[in-house]
Length: 417
Image (cartoon, helix red, strand yellow):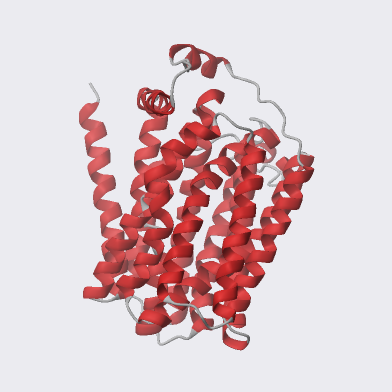
């Protein structure tokens, strides 16, 4: 194989003007989002001193996705995704600004955080699958995997920069500034969306046959949800990918519950140390996204989909046994690397195999499996951390991933004739 075939241009999707507008806007907004992702759990833990009450914040933020994602998918397939995103990003700006004002005026209470988290969760129920399924309208199918990888790079660059800035701002200026800056950052996305003109998507021959077999009928909302679920169930690749995404989504995304407690109670760190540990996760994830963009532009690899979760689980367990700040950071970075290579591959697999008329519903179920499972994972991690400690919390999450993946692979092998 030639060097040219091995190494792809990691920025090939940037040739699309629409995607450039979208990507630059998201870069700004994501830094603000990660500042809030650091400030919010630290604020909740400072107010309550309880890992379990901290886990409830994440639980309430992701619960709407758990219950309403299927309805959101049916709606997304009916309306232009750009219009949906304009509404959801505007709503997120308003909610975040209200939270910032409560913190700034020192009126903030724990129930305020729960309420705002739930409100953002409702908005994200529409926003997340819309963003996921919007990318293909910006770049087409030929550059889809590269665009997904670049979105992951933006997300994880922000995951490095945002927590580091948040840690410094919380330490020197106060938590309220993190929320104010996040509210302002939503304006960047709104400006980029106004400049975008989405393009129609060509349907492949494989997807055409699939669409003919499971063609949507004019029916009510429940009927459309059922059609989407039947379609997913009969697409083996899509169904199997979603099962693994649910496992990883439930147990590998509890950093917002585990890391603040681990930083404070095990490593004796302050806000800045907590922010830096979260930046390690982002740095590893950024390298994983860059690897996907450079080496896997030809398509997702099955080995990544099924081996990646085992590596993530192993390094969550290793993190639980670390005692030094640097070793904890390195272990989190490795977990982040394999986590993002897995989730980018899973995202690409679903979008490349989903037909156009079902893509919104497929990606809403992806959001349900990946993010909607997070409330259960947050409670799981929070209970282990509350009753034992953060070491046991990390270990319990890693063990759960590995055991469930072994059961899943064993079941698949048993099903083969």
